[in-house]
Amino acid sequence: MDRQYRDAIAEASAILAQAMLEDANELIEDGRKLDLKVKSVLWRLGCVLVQTLFRHLQRQLVEEAKQKGFTVERRPKVCFKILFGPIWIESVYMYDRAAKQGYRPLREHFGVVGR
Image (cartoon, rainbow, N blue to C red):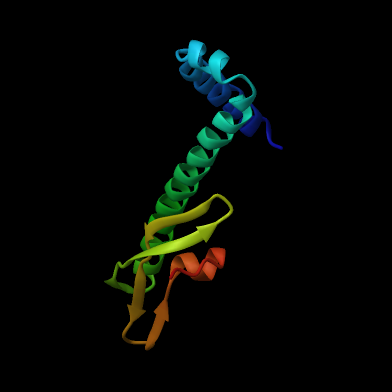
């Protein structure tokens, strides 16, 4: 794992631990359920992280495709089933009229298919 990821994980862990420790009495009271609470927080973090990455990477791919002659035809919100469960995200569909060719950045680059 790259150093930048290790450093980011350490920083995020410290931030999340501090936020969770604000509810220290509840954590102590729940005792053995601590790992379930952490799992819930990490599940939500994973969903938000994947949504954020998809949005940013798709934006970059859309800009590159526009330079090649594609235009955005529609931006439906679709449900993607990922490791952390279902997430809803905009899935851009582009079309190049001259080449008569469609393009879906998320599907073609990440193999993600919405429903």
